[in-house]
Length: 80
Image (cartoon, rainbow, N blue to C red):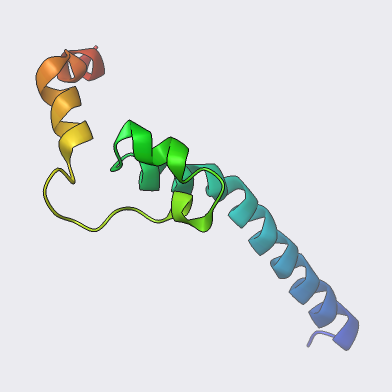
């Protein structure tokens, strides 16, 4: 059985790991949210919380992804 001190230490450790994981996932979330936006919207939202919110699905939602897959050799590059 664990003592109170060990349980407190474990809780502090878990809290620290959660904070660190959010710190390291922060750029990934930002990149994913902005991958659905046009270039102008990315720079316009830079100083607000809207930079982390993807646009609502609708017309042109996957425009960046279709442009990459159709106008470049992305699939070939990934195969290499």
